[in-house]
Image 1 (cartoon, rainbow, N blue to C red):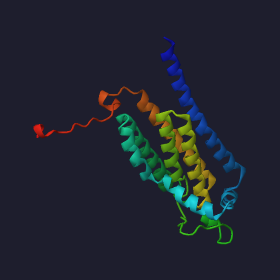
Image 2 (image 1 turned 30 degrees about the horizontal axis):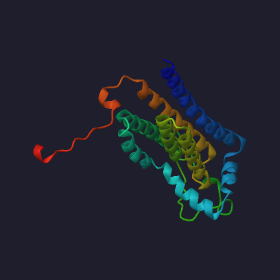
Image 3 (image 1 turned 135 degrees about the vertical axis):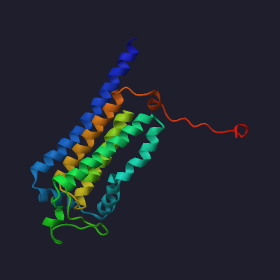
Image 4 (image 1 turned 60 degrees about the vertical axis):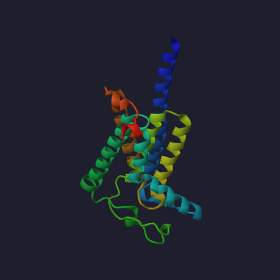
Length: 226
């Protein structure tokens, strides 16, 4: 009698845990963005420069590319089809928000390079530093949106920590590589996280047809059926 209730409470607590965990990082990014001037924040993170960080951040930043969600669309479809659909919807909404911000609302937002000189910062070899469409960070939107969505899907605290660390590192990489200000990353993490939370819970609580709640089934044709 008590077991279903305990399981339900545990599930609700796991959702709350995921939300709180990501909220902590969003708050930290926000504190940094208001504690330092935009260019001071960039120079501080960029000053961590080492050969290891140059290689590490220039590689890990690619986890923020939009195509990163494609394999997870396939993986989630084998769990429950509606999760894959929800992730796709979340990604589309996030992409639309980023395009509107960059192209319509803040088209003249310049990147840190506009305030830097070659001697004022550490430029990483092989990294093409962009000059425009700074706000918000699209890479940060993507990685935070994906990571919090997966955290909500699997409700595993160890996985949540791993994904949260990955999302945070990708966000920091955008500043280290001189592509964005901390404010761009803070807002990007907020957009990605909030969008995924809203879309996930919308699909989780909506009345779904049976085919959406199952994994796809494939039937192999036998020689006698051909």
